[in-house]
Structure formats: structure tokens, C-alpha cells
Image 1 (tube, helix red, strand yellow):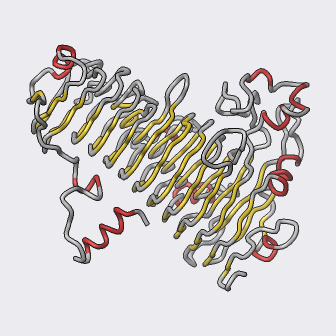
Image 2 (cartoon, rainbow, N blue to C red):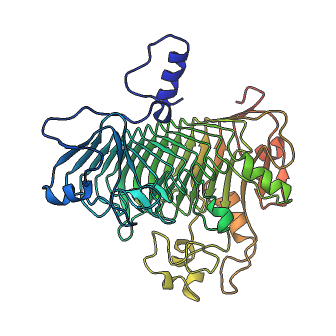
Length: 478
């Protein structure tokens, strides 16, 4: 269980006194530092954008209590200089009034944003209010960033996102995307990420893949730990397209409408010690209502796997020591036979795997032979699922309460070398995907090879699947 939740339980029972600093960011409001020596005092009505232009790099600004606003047009915004800090006194609010698109923009380095409530900004889709241009090594700490359009923030290389409340934003709490070289060294710790995607983008643009609590694109190296991710209108955490080297640890992820964690066409991740509760119920019921038997997963690994040739702290996808309670389902390992670099079925168009630098290389006839036959695919491989506890209530029936290891029958495009059952056979039997040493309660079923095949425990554990060795299903395991 995340440390901040243990503290909350102890406070509720009177075992320990309430701490001075908040342990649940949204409940307590921003962390509000006192005025540091030498800071420039900014009162409501002061033109903070102009002050920032006038004063040198490394200036600390201390915003006093009250509502601070920017210029009266959509591009009224603050453009920090390297090393600037913007700190909020108790009750300091930076309000975009539904007019300004962004709060903090451009590419300064080593900027600090701390102790502010930031709200009412109108960023467009896929853009963020704070650190709009993904500047390097920003520290965004102890803020409440809420009720904005777009994303509460963008992320940049070396960014630290610490103990913030990221609440009720139109698209995301965090959008971790940076054009060009991408993002390295991201830390997201101790935040409450809740209620995001209030604009319901998937309804507006079906299939956009643009919703949830936090979205990560081409991030190489991220620690996501000790966060409370809940009640987001979409996935809680979604890593999409060539992410690598993630540690997702000690988070409480609950009551998100779609997946708790969606890890898509990416590499090398450890998912450890998280608690996942009541996720995917809205999405799962929607699939069931329309008769769609695809095994919706609470953790959904889609064309993602361990790859030793992509440098990381691990060479696998390891899902270990997590607790799953009353979610729609368990873990789905899926590989779309028709999705590969240069395929029209690749929704991340223009992207290739981390093993092939050129999209155009993945074409007939070369793609039919090694190494391109292997390297043009994002593979669900080297996934290890062990030491987890899976439970759901007896009310689960129909399409819920399932694990899955499967692919589709390849059909498209006509020059694809992956047509037929080649991918479903590989993901099921030859790509090193293993469940073992898990504990189950409630009735569970297992979808294998493709959506037409659902088996019970004995078939899942027996040949040819040979999964969940030494796991317990109300018995003692090995």
C-alpha cells in the first residue's frame, strides 16, 4: 500500500496526529511555502508577465494571497527564464479566466512552480497549461492544478512532479510528450490525479487515444510511484508509443473508468507493489452491452514487451506483488497481428519500433525475412506476472473476471508477412509470457490465443498453455 495511504489510515484511527504537510493533495490544498529571503513579492493586479521579462534569470517570485490574472487575451502567459521560481503564499491563485491558454510557457530550464492553485486556463487538445513547451528539469511541487482545458501540465526531460493535486482537467492531469528527442528521467511521485478528461474526448473523437489521468509518449526512463490515481474518465495511467524503462510502484489506482494501466507499443517496465481497485468497470460494461467479447483488462499490455536490445533497468515486463480487488478483469496481454511499423493498421502512424530507424524499411519484400521480420513488430514478449493477488466479488459474471493471452488472426495489409495464426501462436507459446505464483479468489476464466477460446483453471494450467504454475485458486498452490 502507498505510504501516504497508510498515514491516512493511522490519522483516521488516532494512532498518529495529522501532519503539517498534506498527505492527500486534493484534500489539503497546495503546499504553501513562506516568503523566502530575497523573493520578489507579487500582489494581485501586478503584471507578472512583465515582471518576469524585466528581472534576471534565477529570480524567485512570491505570489501573495488572492486571485492573480494575466493579460486579457488568449496568449497572456508567463515566460520564465532559467532558474526562475514561482511560489505561492497560502491562498494564492493563478486564474486564466477561461481566456488565457497557458500559464507557463517556452523552454527555460530549472524552473520551480510550487504552492499555487492554477485554474481556468483553456489549453487546446494535447497541450498543457504548465510547462507548455516541455522545458528541462522543471520542479512542479505542491500545487493544485484544476479545472483547466487540455492537460494540467506537459512534462520535459528531468522533470519532477511532486505532491500535486491534478484534478478535473479537460484532458489529462499530465501529458508527457516532447517532440524530437522525447523525455528522459521523469519522476511523478506522491500526486493525486483525479477526475481528468472532463471534456470526454473519446466521445468527441472516437479512437483518438487522448484521454485519462496521465499519458506518456516516447518517455525513456520514468519513475511513477506513490500516487493516488482515481476516478479519471478514461485510463488512469497510459503509456503509448515507444516508452521504455518505467518503474510503476506503490501507487493506489482505483475507480478509473477504463484501464488502471495501459502500456501500449512500448518496452521494459516494472509494475510492482500497486493496489488496483474497481477499475475498468465503465469500459467493461460498455463492451459487454454491445456484445463485444474482447477481454478488457485492468492492466492492458498491448504490443509491449521486454527487449534486451533496448537499454533499461530491466529487460522484461514484470508485473509483481500487486493487489487487484473488484476490477472488471485482470491482466490482458494482447498483440495485434496487423499492427506493425509501416502498416496502415498502426494507429501511431509515422512511428517505427525502437529497433528500426526508418518506417520505410518495413516493407515488402525485406520485411518477410530476418531481421526486419522480428524488428518491425512491437511484440508482447518476456512478460512475467507473479506474486499478485487477484480477487473479485461473486456478482461478476459474463465478460468480467477474465485473464487473457491472445492475438487476432492476421489479415491486413495483403503484403503483411504476419497473416494467419502466426502471431497468436507466437504470443501464446513462444514469446516467454508467463503467469506463476499468483493467488486468486473468486471465479476466474482465461482467454487464450484468440477471442474465441476461453478456458477454465485446469486447462489454463495444463498443456499446452502451462500457465500459473504454483498459483493458488483457493488451494495452497505448490
